[in-house]
Structures are given as structure tokens and as C-alpha cells.
Length: 102
Length: 228
Image (tube, rainbow over all chains, first blue to last red; front, side, top):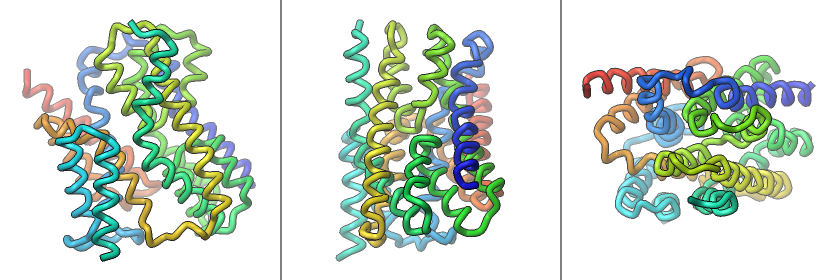
């Protein structure tokens, strides 16, 4: 039962990856739509970032003093100036752990 | 002009910093599956068959919480529907490929790989074999995902939850979008997406993950109209 649902979930997931790549031709998307699509990273990733930072595991809002909020600000500042992915992630994680454990 | 090999290795190099968050996340994903009492083969099978971190965790949590298989499968589909947007962006760069190659390369389209390859594509539009960069990012992430979920399955409850390794996920995506904070239109789009993801968080089937990007893209379309 579980295997069958995993295989169906896998096929569905593959279809989400394949549909636009394989079945859409460039001329089917107008220039205007292409301009809008250039915002896709900015339009998608905050939907992963915001809930992960502002919600607890049980889906309630965190306190304003939550270490995740502070560590995210550190990561944003470090990332903005360093333009470096490793520096961004590690500065966030390290400042998070420092607040958490000290 | 880069050779195919150079593009492949460029892709690997561009995405490898994200391992810092992909590996802990993979370990968590494997460990959660075991903790919830699932068969190790099943937990690992998902990493090959579904190959989508967040959706794998949600799938296991829903099933173990007593949700029906239909709800679990639908949620995976909804969570992963964001790939439709990635595909729409990438289709422009991959249009010259044969249909078979498009079918094969699609399997490798994942968040961080899309993010890094898309950045590279935008700067190198005239390159001939651009798709090798995507194969580089995608296959690197695939190998890491397989190894780290396996590690999580084996380590199981040895992974301390107090470490809060899950926090590496938002950090990896902060690293992806942080440079776009220089552009006010992108900032507006990001805030729209972020706020609506908080508002719609409890919408059925985790649909906030696709509702918020659609709302943000509508705002982007309006912004483009004002700019002209």
C-alpha cells in the first residue's frame, strides 16, 4: 500500500518537473510572461523561508526574540555583503547555535 | 565558450556550497522516517522515486498521523507543483534539446539546482551546451541526497533534534535570494510571497507553497506594468 502511494507520488512529482520542460516551447510563452517568470526565485523561495523562520514545529508563531529570527538577520547581512553561500549558511547556523546553547 | 565538461563541473561547483544544508536535511529526512516507524527500504525508496526533501517528510508525517494515502499523495503533488514554475523558466534554455533528453533531465530539476543553474543561464545565454550545467547541479544534489538520507536511516535516533538542523533549510534559500534584495521590485515580490505563505500556511494540502508564489507573480506582473 505504502509502496504504491510512493510510486504514485513519485510519478506526480516527476510530472511537475517534466511538464513545462518537455511540453512547452519557447514561442508558447510570450515576452511579457517571460519577464514575469524572471521573478520566479524571488516569488517561490520566501514561501520556504518565512514559515521555517516564523513558525514553530507545531505551527504557531515564534516569539519576536526567537533565535531563528536573529540568526536569519545575521545570515541576510553576511550574505548580502559577502555574496558567499557558505558564509551565509554557516553564519546563520553558528549564530543560531550560540544563542541556543549559551 | 565552455566545453560540456567545464559546464558540468561549473554546475557541480556552483551548487556544492548548498551541501551545507542539503546534507543535514537529508539526514533529518532519513532519521524522521525511521523514528516514525517506517520500513527503512520504504524511507530510502522515496529518495529515488520522489527525490524531493520537504515532500518526503510531509508524506511520512501524514501517513504516520493516520491520514489517508490519497491525502498524502495529493500533498506531495501540491508541494512539488512549484517545479512547474522552475520548468517554465528553464524551458527557454533547454528548448534545443531532444524530447528524450528533456524527459531525462527533468528528473534532476530541484530547488537549489534550479536556483544556481538559472543564475548561470541568465549570465551565459549564448552558451551552446547550457544543459550540462543543470546536469552538474542536479546530479551533485542527487548523489548527496541519496547518501545523506541513507546516513539518516542508519543513524536514526542518534541525530539530536536539539541541534535544530532543520534551520539550515531557510538559510540555504536566504543565500539564494539575498542578492536580489538590492532591487526594490524583487523585495516587494519576496515580501508578498513571504507574508502570504504565513497567512495561507494552514490551507489544505500545504497549498501555501504554490498559492504564495502565484500571488507574488501577480504582483510582479503589476510591477512590470507600472515600470513601463
